[in-house]
Amino acid sequence: MKRSNLLIAAVALTIAACQPQVDRFAVSGTVTGAQGQTLYLDHMGIDAVVPVDSAKLGEDGKYSFSQPAPEGCFDIYRLRLGSKVINFAVDSVQDIEINASQADMQTAYSVSGSESSNKIKEVVGRHMQFLKDLQDVQNRYAGPQVGILSQHVGELLDVFKSDLRNGFIFSDPGSAAAYYCLFLSVNGQTVFSPQQDRQDAKTFAAVATSMDIKYPDAQRTAHLHNLALKSMAATKAPTPVSQETIDKLNSLIVESGLIEIELPDRTGVMHKLSDTKGQVVLLDFTAYKTNYSANYNLALRDLYDKFADRGFQIFQVSFDADESFWMNSSAQIPWISVHDENSLASTILNSYNVSQLPCAFIIDREGVIVQRPDELAELEASIEKLLDN
Image (cartoon, rainbow, N blue to C red; front, top):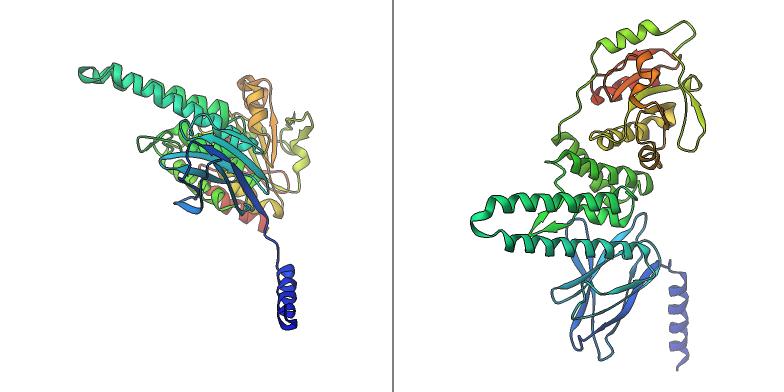
């Protein structure tokens, strides 16, 4: 090699070494029985499915793809061979191995190196079984028995949605599998209908709330957050507490301040309401195992994120009869969340003269109740005013 060529090569290597290295993930393995066919790697984006790479399979069926690793959140990809696909999740820089055969590619593949992808595989298995059961019911009640068919289809769908909620969503709402469940479809119709069904809206809000905490800056989080908020607007809001509540509560307040509340959080640490003096506080009485809770907490999260660094705190009291449900649901709540084991028989509810949940009160920095908002929409302006004082 000429000296000039050596110099050019050396400069090129130096420049390459100085370039920032992009973290990448790799997926590889074999797909047997598909010699000569093209295997595609598709990115499952929010608005579109985009092919990002492809490989022609040889006799051994081996393939290997590499792409930039996701930043700030998991990502979803799929392997596609003809009309058959394998969906999988990428959490970070990792090496994932997926092996399959063309004949039963969608149901009998194996995954190693990605726990999230194995969870998605479980979801896919449940989804495939649901489609099989649905087809069996349609075959059994075809023709004049259309009314019975509709009833059985509805029952199957309810069972399937409950299976997804309990098995994959509420158990780990910030996971890739939980997110994946939300967008499953059957014959072009989504399984969950959050803008028509209150329970489905709750399901979306549960995942959105968890992703807000785990992946606050991710595009998927923002998209899901907006969907959850639209679902909140489309479903019926809980009936607000009567205006009499604030008047009766004020009559119970003594010169020393609020009626004390001292209860444990999910770790057993005791919290006193009086310890929040000096902050602007939203005293919130609620129950997590309700239709409104996930949507409600999602709205509170927006308030907390906006004002927490200015001296705003939420002191939330749960009156759930199912303490374990509250403990699991509040695991990633950033504000003070405590539990009263007496549930709706609590003396706290009697002392504060609360007859309906949820019920919220705004407390100023001096520990005085200044407002009982009729709607969550009133909170932001009221809190902003108190923080500025």
